[in-house]
Amino acid sequence: MTDAPKKGWFSRLTEGLSRSSKQMTEQVVSAFVKEPLSEQALEGLEEHLLESDLGPAAADRIVERFRALRFGANPSELEVKTALAEAVADELKGHQATYDPLAGPRPFVTLFVGVNGSGKTTTLGKIAADLTARGAKVMIVAGDTFRAAAREQLKVWAERAGAHFESRRDGADAAGLAFDAFTKAKAEGFDVVLIDTAGRLQNKSALMDELLKIVRVLKKVDPDAPHETLLVLDATVGRNALEQEKIFGRTAYVSGIVMTKLDGTARGGVLVPVAQASDAPIKLIGVGESIGDLQPFDARAFSRSLMG
Ligand code: GDP
Image (cartoon, rainbow, N blue to C red; front, side, top):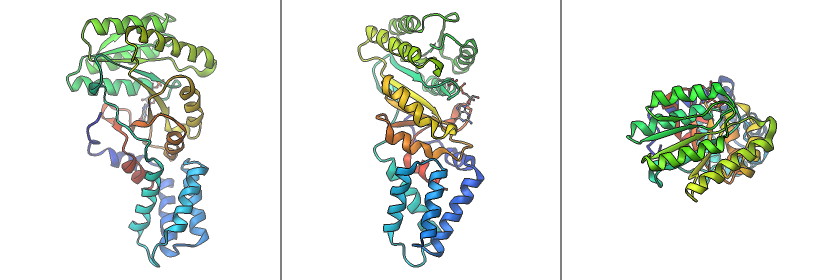
C-alpha cells in the first residue's frame, strides 16, 4: 500500500466525480478568469466548496485565500484551477499517512471499524489481495459474527485473495474469536491479521463495548495490538461521515481513516472536514469495487481531481 498510486486511478476518480460538480468547477474558474476579484466569483467559489461538502470552515478559509491571492488582470484557467487545488491540498496538510502492515511487527494486526455498508469488507478484501500478491501470509477474521451475509462475503474475498479465513457461527463472541485467531496467527507465523468487526449503530454502546473488548483481548496476546485500527467511511453519505468519525474516533482508538466510494460522488469534499476533525490521518481511499480500486491517499492528487 505504500506503492505510488497505480496509473489510471487518478482519472477514474476524476471521471467518477459527478458532471454537475465538474460543471460547477468550470463555472467558478471561468468567473475568476473573467473578473478575478469580483464578489460574484468569490461567492460562486464558496457555494461550490459547500456543495462539495468541504464544510463552512474550510470554505471560508479558501475564499479568504482567494481574496488575498491577487491574480493578475487576466489569470489563465490553469492558474485558477491550480490555485484551487493547492488551497484544498493545503487544508489536508498533516492529515495524510501511509498504511503498510508489512513494515510493522509480525503478525501485524489491523482492526476494521465502521458502520455497515461503509465498505469495510470490501476494503479488507482489497488489502488482503494486495498483501498476498506481495507474498505475505494473511489471515482474515470474520469479527462481525452477527451477519451471516457479511461472513460469506468476506469468505469469498479470502478465497479470491488466497488468505486464511477464521470465522464462527452466528452470534458467537467476537472477542473470543479475535483472541483465538490472533493466538493461532502468532503460533503459525502469519504476517498479517485483518479483523472485520460489526457495524450496527442501532445500539452504539453495545457496539463500542464489543470493539473495546476485542481491543482488550488482543492486548493480552500482544500489548501493542491492534497495530492499526482503520475507520472505514463512505464518502457518499456526505456530512454524516463526520458524525460517524465522532462516534468511532472517540472510543475505538482509530489510527487511520479509509474513505471509500470516492468514485461517483460529488460529496468527496467531506474528506477535508473529516480529516481535520479526526486525530487520525487519512491513509487509503476507495475508488471502485474491484481489487485494484484501493489506493494510498495522496492529498495533492485528491485535491486536483476534486476540483478538476
Ligand atoms: P460493509 O458493510 O462495511 O462491510 O460494506 P461492504 O464492503 O459490503 O460494501 C458495501 C457496498 O459498497 C458494496 O456493494 C461494495 O461493493 C461497495 N463499495 C465498497 N467500497 C467501494 C468503493 O470504493 N467504490 C464503490 N463504488 N463501491 C464500493
